[in-house]
Length: 67
Image 1 (spheres, rainbow, N blue to C red):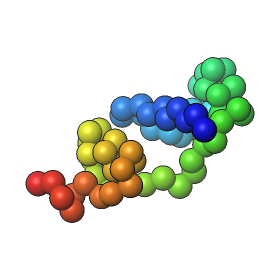
Image 2 (cartoon, one colour):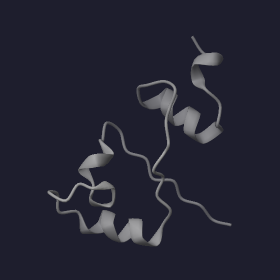
Image 3 (cartoon, rainbow, N blue to C red):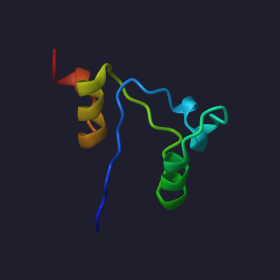
């Protein structure tokens, strides 16, 4: 099985067409969403970017084992 995870920093998902952002023209995002799995309920327990990435990639909450 091959998997590619696409993650963006400081991007509100409501700005993208697959998540309801109809005022923005982003055909590549729309095409990618049609051919891939989109997550509608993915929450992170800590912010900003690096702790959130660690949580998404490992499935463990960052604040439990990092200061």
